[in-house]
Length: 321
Image (cartoon, rainbow, N blue to C red; front, side, top):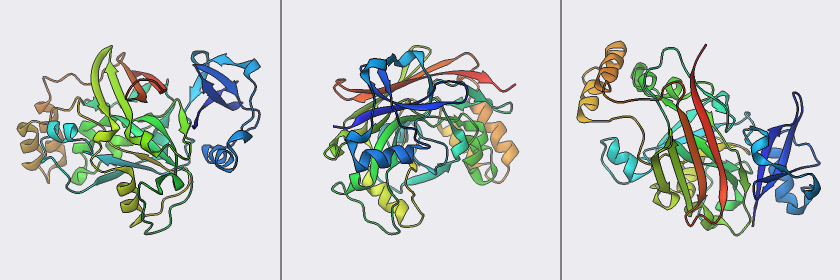
């Protein structure tokens, strides 16, 4: 059995880590500069994380920070659920693994506001399971389900916030700017450090997202098309994977983007004209309500049977000032 850890702001200058049990937080007595250091301590000796139950405080009273410190590479998967492929209007099934990145500066806390950029009209959400590496992955490493936990140390909840008009209005459709703004990757609150026999847990999780109380996304991780071992093996074949790096494994159906044939036509017919392509995309979405200031998102991660919970995010949308 693993443990649930969080990172929180105790005072203006003091950051602490804590163990979560039954929505109570027991602060750790040792300071860890990053989630890497904490994961190292747990891997070396799970009982080394010292805390006292006598100083437990309610989780909801704390100012929560991302449990993944922002000194990482963030790799992401797209179209990794059939339900998302279907709503995206693309051919379903196992084609090529769609992989892209987000900058670490997009990471924010699980209760922080999500800032809509001044030039964004089509702001969208994407609930995702994020895996966190506990060691470097050497080049061309073959990762299987049997050795997966030699490399993956834990998981957390993430939101791949996306400015659709900035993604598809960018030169050659590059997504980095549309998915890379500050606050575009709320993470946590819980980083679950996995026990050595819990590999099956990764395919036994349920992700949910609601917008202003209305359910929008609800899926389980056994529906992933490219599994974590396959994706990490592919990544290791062409790039360096470092201890502490994070992999967002894709979002299920239920996003706001209305990817109708009209949308596809707007993109294809204006492939070499960035400004016009963006204008046509926005026009195609005129009857769709995207995220607006004051909207509230709630994301949750738990086991499929609901017996174990791994945290919830609550984020409010606001405009850049």
